[in-house]
Image (tube, helix red, strand yellow):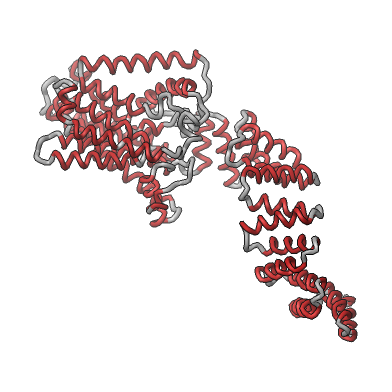
Amino acid sequence: MTAAAAAPPQSALAGRPIVSVSMAINFALGGLSPVGYHAWNLTVHVLCGVLLFAVLRRTTAFTSEYGRQSQFAAFAVTSLWLVHPLTSEVVDYVTQRTESMMALCALATLYAAIRAGERNGHEQLWTAAAIAVCAIGMGTKESMATIPVLVVLYDVAMSHERPGAVFRKRWTLYAGLAATWLVVVALNLGGPRWRSAGFSSGVAPLDYFENQLPMIVTYLKLAFWPAPLVLDYGVPRSLPLHDVWPSALVVVTLGLVALLAWWRSRPLAFAGTAFFVLLAPTSSFVPIATEAGAERRMYLPLICLIVLAVGAVSRVAKATGVVPTGSDGVPGRRILAAAALGATGALLMLLTIARTSEYRSETSIWQTVVARHPHARAHYNLGVALAASGNRQAAIDEYRVAAAADWPPAHYALGFELQNDRQFGQAIQEYTKYIQLAPADAQVPHAHLQIARAALSQGNAAEAESAFRQALALTPDSSDARGELAGLLLDQKRFPEAAEEYGQYLQRQPGSAPGHHNLALALAETDRLPEAIEQFRQAVALGPADLDLRENLARALAAAGRLNDAAAEFEAVIARSPHRASAHAALADVLIALGRRDEAAAHVRQSLSP
């Protein structure tokens, strides 16, 4: 279970053990088949809808607003949210179940907190349930940290009492929920995603905040006009003032409206405030270096907007006489409301189906990003998808577009393709540019290794050795770099250095027959024949079908004066390959040294046979 809850550092699941376990369950049941993963995501999404409906039905203010139609209104909000295209990403994009599983825990926490306040004799049980589910939610995604605050705001909004009185009544619940923040702290102490999120991620908080203002306006637009949808909005960048201030004006105005509403209508204020609170962890000033924006961040905040929209439509309908005031039981009203809901829901569902179809392949989804919101990473990822589908030239074209915008991985990918085309000089230039742009990237050691290989292909041994050593300075445990450096030293007849490098290589790759063989060659050249023979024997044991290994063992035995042993090894080689001229010739020399001239002559004739 511990292994299942872990995830590689810097990955989407790092520090989120509950989601990691869900992935492990999927893998145990169905391997890498996407069916089970999408089924899980869809199930979680539907369960979120069930809990949302339950929360709305138990919200007193919601009931008082819609009267006997409150159940229909709760159904309207829930159904519109379930089929809205903005929620599709958490189902279609497997790892983004982090958002929906967090939402499931958030809604369950709010529901349990509501039940705990109903004074039905089970207050302590529901309080414990709320705290437990909240703690579990903290292990799904860090955004869960907003939920204790929202529970307090919900209670204040739905109560006619002063905030202080509300807090005194439920302080045990609030304290327990606040204590679950320790789970988030514990899971993030080691900085599981320090390169991608937080103040150490390399993005200035002000730059990130400036990016969020237009993104929030984009989210608002997509909530009411969900097209075009974009999987990847690129990385945060420095924005000019004229791109920021109109969005800032909109966001500040809406924030002030939500704040002022606390003096006029607390339920309305809660919906508006909850929208901003839920977005705060990802869409404020705490940098997320990998994403300027993401539509999945609207998963829970979208509920607030739909609640406000349903309420606004209902009030406008009453005010304009479309729906007579106080006519809850009039069949015409129910039919009109159902028709409006059905038409809106059908339209949203069609848009969601169309959006889901765009996820049919990596190529198709990245083509939508390039078409709708082009940026360097999108071109690079489209190139990766095209390469995987066999369209190499189109992939290279995309890499060039991304590289022109100095997207580091594009330079690496372009270098790799140029190296395959034997354009080694250009490949080295691309790898070098990649290292300059992203010196701390995890692939930098491998880029040095690729530079070394390209330099060797050009015959530039000095540059190759330098690149090998730079790769090893960054990753001393790299067996590839160590082994290839050792081979270079062996080719240059720098035998003591080659022996040292092969020794370290074999500590990491003890089962490498070529490694033992090459170490033996280096040892033999430094007059360490007993050690060389032992290494030859290990090479033969690991590669018994390779006759070159056994023949070299025989030569080493002969050089050490162990002529009978050498003869036996040569004979074993000849038994496997009767026409092997080199073995016959070497065996003849050994037999002459042993005084067995007649046998030697026979092997000489064999060595000369065509």
